[in-house]
Amino acid sequence: EIVLTQSPGTLSLSPGERATLSCRASQSVSSSYLAWYQQRPGQAPRLLIYGASSRATGIPDRFSGSGSGTDFTLTISRLEPEDFAVYYCQQYGSSPETFGQGTKVEIK
Amino acid sequence: QVQLQESGPGLVKPSETLSLTCTVSGGSISSYYWSWIRQPPGKGLEWIGFIYYSGSTNYNPSLKSRVTISRDTSKNQFSLRLSSVTAADAAVYYCARLYYYAKIDSYGMDVWGQGTTVTVSS
Image (cartoon, rainbow over all chains, first blue to last red; front, side, top):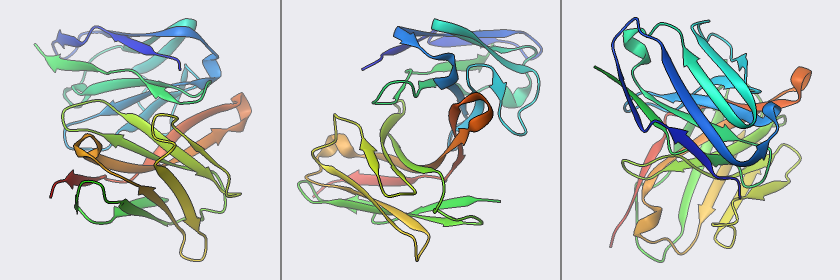
């Protein structure tokens, strides 16, 4: 099973700042099979990024994904109030599909 | 616009079987993969498994001995059964569509239900 480790656990930032979230895999993951999700309190997760760097439908361009192999990054260029949430990475390259433990982006 | 809605008992007794249904509207389940994911209170996401439109399934090995995912194309629904539940199975259960992005050979769960809370208690 591929273990995904996200860091930091919590990121305290102000609106307008840049957020950089990391997802590290215990073994190599095809970049095609790495996705990022956002989960706001009380809501279902929402797909942000698939294929490591492709934005899902309707996702603003302030969200971007990058990385390959075992190291992947989600960047939010300028935080908007609605971006304060928990973010999860997920890999589909190896069964079972696994999620990272999440990074909480909170208002500083 | 495809929408998913989970339904089923919110309370299940220990050792009994949890049964949930996901109703798909605005699209057919005769395409794509259809997944179940759960989230224990205050914790992260756990993939349970999926069913392909063909009927083939894939389960998380940690739950495989207790899980069955099935589909009813006539009702445009797919279902989850989890047997011998314990307190550790208490969670919000989500159904989701796993979409295949053919241009780049990639996947993403692009449509989710709102989730349903299952409590395990006698």
